[in-house]
Every structure is written in structure tokens, then in C-alpha cells.
Image (cartoon, rainbow, N blue to C red):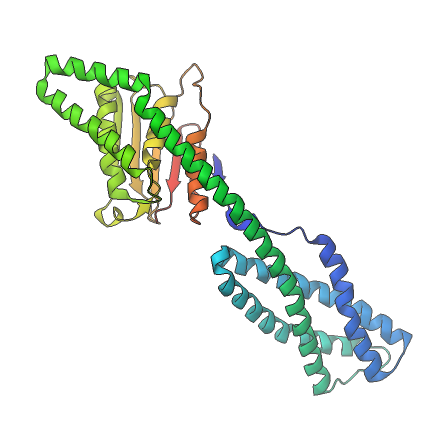
Length: 349
């Protein structure tokens, strides 16, 4: 199964290999100078403290760096900078206070000179203070770089959201004046007027509902799922008139989930995508299912029966859906295709 998952919390992840290669030796030097001042100059002591410092500081750096990414995964948005910084630096203080005494004690156990065989409490406390201070300095540099990247990404995202909104409006307008859509709808309406005036009236009302929703929702960032489902019923009625029993739409959404929200026209884009790319015949019906999974995410799936001739598509529909969710700071929809079923799982706000 091919699964596409967009993880936006990693977009500002730094490539800091050189910073670490330089930063670790530099951070060891103050500890070496501290031991020289405390116990006197001995080359064996210099090499011992520097070598031990490289090993332990490198490991500590990686642990604190891991903690940075945990904090960022939890509070990755620029609006959560304060919480992210607080969580990051609390972790620095706690982890360093636990690790540094072990490093100091370990050094005293491997010291062949015997100069630091029994570190005093002052040595332990000084090491902890120095390590926390340096961790805060390095962490501050990391956070400034990360914040600047987030700010730059926010500007890029704002521009992308503006373009995505314009594209959505353009697509909606194109649908409203699409000659094929109008031609098919008017032909269906004309046929129904002669055959069944009551059905023709219903069809006309559903067509009006579709256009009314398209015009109304363009300025909305989010709409209730219930509104999307109502619109989808009208849109499905129009498709059903054309395809008959060859197109089957099943929606199983509990009432308590209908007040959750999602970007407008999301469901219509997914249904249109399914209809556009698959064969729809009485002997090969297209089944589209909507339901909430155990995490209360909305799943839209359809059986795959691809058309023999490739359908011209620019992929704007799915791309716009992913872009809108990213701009809203929400988890990305999950797109899956196992060759038998195409499934899109949407988080609801």
C-alpha cells in the first residue's frame, strides 16, 4: 500500500552537523580550564578532561537535541513559541542536572593521576551551573534559528494560502460556468420536465443549492461538516441523475461529529476526483463511502476501477486540500492507494 503523509512539523528541522562538530569541542574547553585552575596544569589532566569531555558532551548534546525536537513536535507553530521555549529550557535544566554529576563522577573514576579522585560538592555544583549555562546558550541559538525559519515559512505559507484560495475560487467559478457540467445538468433537467415534472423541480432545487453553496463558501476558511454533507447531498443528486444506480454514495457520520469543521469544498473535490478517474457502469458501479474512524477522522474511500484512457488532470484538487490543512496548522490528510481502494482520511477541526 502506498501511503502519503505530510509531516509539517519537520519543515524547519536544521541541518546543524557543522554546528555540532564545532560546538562540542568549544563547549569542552571551559571545563578543561576549570580543572587546570582547580588542580594545576598537567598535560595528562588536560588530555584526560578534554577527551572525556568530547565523549560525554557529545552524548549530552545529542540527548538535549533530541529533547528540542520533542518540544518542537508538540509546539511546532510560531504562535506556540513561548510554550516551546519554556518546555525546551525546563528539559535542558532537568536533563543537565541529572547527567552532569554522572559525568563528573565518571571522570574521577578513570583519572590515572589521582588529582580528581574525590570531587568536592563545589566541583559538582560548578559543573552543573556551567553545563546548564552552556546548554541555555546553545539552546538559545537553536531557538533563534528555528524561529527565523518559522517566520520565513509563515510568510511563504501566507502567500501559498493566498494562491490556494485564489485557485479554489477560480476552480469554483470554472465549475459554475463549465459547459459540460451545465450541458449535462440542463439536458437532465429538460428530460425530466417532460418525463417527471416533480423530479424536475427537485433537480432544479438541488442545482440551485449547489451554486448557492459554491458562492457562499468561497470566503470561509472552515465550514461545519454538516454543511458540507448537506451540500454533498445536493451535488450527489445531480450526479445520480446522470449515472443512476451506477454511482453509490454511503455516508455514515454520527450526529456528534457533524459539528466538527473542515475546509469548504473538500468533500466535493474528493467526490469529483473519484468520478473523474473511475469507470461508472451498471455492471461496474462506483461505491463511495464516508465514515468516521476510531480517531474521529473523516474517511472518504472509493473502489478503484480506472478508466482505460488517461484522464487529463492537473492534480490541483488534492494539492489544494493538503495546502489548506497545512495553512490551518492541522495534521495533514492521509492519502492511501492500495490498487483496490483509494482512501483519503481527513482530520476534523
